[in-house]
Image (cartoon, rainbow, N blue to C red; front, side):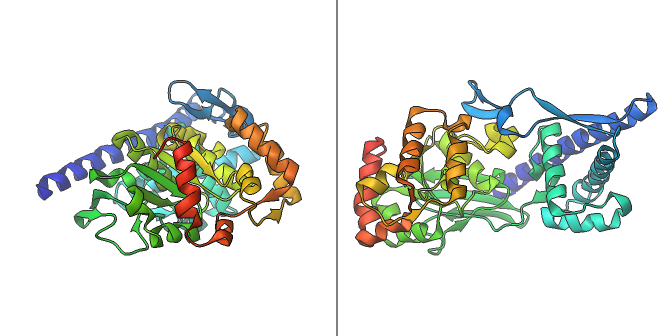
Length: 373
């Protein structure tokens, strides 16, 4: 049985590598053909701005619209961008796909030191180029064997999975077979198969302190909940795994963050998709996800300990009022209230009412209001 699973994993990986190679080489060949035809080499790519995201009725997420920018060799800057693009394609095809190797985004930046005038000036530049390749090829960077720099987030709860690795297959129960830090989510979650579960819902949690509080208080056992630690702005693998558990297993998803504009954007990236990665929204966003809080109305109702909004916080909230992802009555009401009271609160502010208040009172009340429990 395990041999069959490993064989299927190997075959699927070969297909993915073949697809990635063909699309990357297709881009390079297109630029070459433009040279041969005496056309100034150029590539069109979706504009990654708030003004170019639109709602997809088909997938219920926010995706890029029709606005495009052009990478063209008509300018020196554009010519360098295309040169770096071709160098990157050459590296990904010859080193990653042909040799079954992988690199982090940070390593790619340093690898380019050997590319003479094509080397990247800063890591942000190489990061953007990989995002460009994702948009142009309609593939995720995992297909190119590009790994994130950060450690994976974790989850804890009543679900049994099978993870396929280069060292074979592992079956893991995410409560019984792990320590209290949880199961570490790998960077490529397509290698995970869901075997069985007893979960009633998934609660995605912004901070490590609140994640640990829920585990310590036995929230996962009492409510049959899968706890996912987002680690701040969630990694792509975390968002993808949440989406898979929601869609493939039919488990509802709720998101629990701090009560500030930056945390609302964390929720938006889980539920609606992030602006800079809107090309992947259909792959990673979970439109059925619901926001628990901390809500501005919670700050008022529970008289939570707060901090004053900074000027940057206020600017961010005002920006969210024009962000299409927050264009509904709920968010307009909550954001307007927060601008009025000029306060923000952390998840841990509930500890001021006792260490068990958040798990015994606040979360059960909110989950009941949302018809989750």
